[in-house]
Image (tube, rainbow, N blue to C red):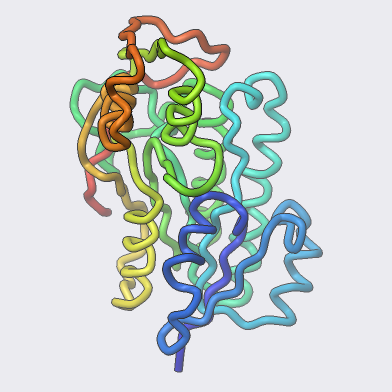
Amino acid sequence: MSNKILVTGANGQLGKTIEDLYFNNQNELNFIFVSKAKLDITEAEELRLFFNKNKFDYCINCAAYTNVEQAEKTPEIAFKVNAEGVKNLAEICKEKDVVLMHISTDYVFDGEKNEPYTINDSPNPINEYGKSKLLGEQYIQQKLKKYFIIRTSWLYSKKYGKNFYRSILEKARTKKNLSVTVEQIGCPTDTINLSKYIIQLIKTKNDSFGIYHFCDGVPMTWYDFAKQILRENKISNNVNLVRVNKYRTFAKRPKKSILVEKFK
């Protein structure tokens, strides 16, 4: 019997990647992909009705508010989705005995540690986005035993969404000079690799529940990543890439948030 899997926030870059890779894999996995328009995780009664009509084995929660800058100005929106919405999901997953697979972030850390962060390090978010994501994690831990909290970093898709990879390519087509910061260090992570990791946890029937870290494992600055993107797309000679030390941002961001792939 195939596992039935709900994917929330399916219009985002990760949800779309999972759909690309696995939608036709009907023999092993049976997916239901829902966007916010079809299922809003902040509406508890809407969630209840949906789960009453459908039986799931897993819920991959890709629904999130990820605008870090705007979250500083209107934190209530970030907390509504990233914390209260996740709380709603955790409660219904407990009631219906569904394994919740929740995507979290390196932004739950402050970026002050000189070494990579393990799952045993204490979170200390320095912006509203990170705080809202951490509260979502805490709700899951309080309410569920069957869960995977998967923290990732600098997530990007080459095909979908608004992200650094696609933004650099877009800017490279219209600008001769690109200024990119070296102030932050992290591990850019392709949605394809994260998707494969998530599905592998399901296919292997992994029951070592808890917090996981997953990233592509190569630490670099945003400047390094931009250089890699231009080189990969063979447009390095068309753009003057300028290294800058400062990054103009309203929200504080962790300067060094490398994650180590270890589990609890």
